[in-house]
Amino acid sequence: MSGSAIVVGAGVGGLTAAIALDRRGWDVRVYERAYSMEAAGAGLALGPNALTALDSIGLGETVRGLSALQGEAGIQRRNGRWLSRTSAEVAEERFGNPTVVLHRAALLDTLESAVPDGAITLGAEATLVEPEFGRVVFADGTSAKADLVVGADGLRSAIRAQIFPEHPGTAYAGVTSWRIVVNRPTSEVLATETWGRGKVFGTAVLADGRIYCYATATAPAGERAADEKAELARQFAGWHDPIPALIDAADTVLRTDIHCLARPLGRLSSGKVVLLGDAAHAMTPNLGQGACQAIEDAVVLGQYAEKPGGLMLYSAERAKRTAMVAKRSRRITDLTSVSNPVGVAARDTAMWLAGRLGPNLVLRQMEPVFNWRPPA
Image 1 (cartoon, helix red, strand yellow):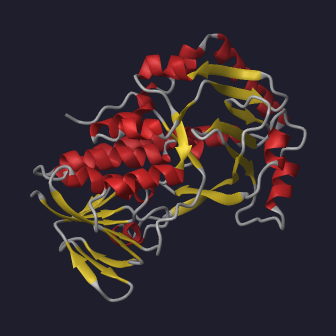
Image 2: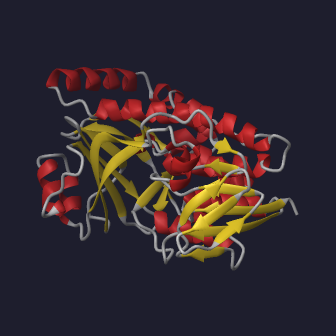
């Protein structure tokens, strides 16, 4: 037995960490503040790097079975003309894995089923952590102690705020988002993003045939509409088919402002405590790497945790990599937020010219993100 571990948070990163540590012989307990494991959200993308990480803990094939491979993909203008395009087949040939899309609930159910029976405690909100002792205190006054504490408690992590009180926390990224899942329409739907003036509308096909759609637009923080479906339709009125039909088919529209860390953390550990996932490096969603980086974190932690100085190795390696990925993602956020007509024209022209040079140029830009392998 390698030791005992407490994981605070039962999201994608926390559950994957529990699995990775369990398979290395750790006695793992997971504490989740929610009173049920019902998953909020809609779809999520897992890039080649996330599938590589899941393969290393024996879950890659299971997740592929829950996913839809995305065929032709790319970026379009609001009138439907292509700016750049590629395909899942080309990407898989280059990176060894495709990008797949699945419902967040399906992924969480799969991860939960791989955690040891009885290891998850619900309704346990962590309010205090003592890094030097590996002790966590919960809102009901109870506490737990372990050789390792994993802070996977999300965007507004209480553990991050305690061990790095000087850090400013999260900041609004300047864009709000909408998410919907709808039945497949009669017309073909591709895995695309459409970029307009300060707006994006993306579509992806889920394994069950439904369509996951996400949209973003620049907006003041906290702004809300009385009818979010009507607001979404207004924001994307006049965009190419099948966008209006997809919005019209929506039953539920989820709206969330996008927040990310105000600045990267210089390190991800303190004493017996480490951070992973959004608690460590909350980033904008434009690269689809939030869950992917959390999964990478978990796999690397599982490999390093029992080594001498392993938590410092984990901290140094993951802080550097996730800062790079977050910076690239924020760069795309800034590009999609351009609303000045001259700036939009310049952006679209540059993307069109890059696309004319072939899909390999576009994919090559993703090599630092997708070409990841677990440490030996």
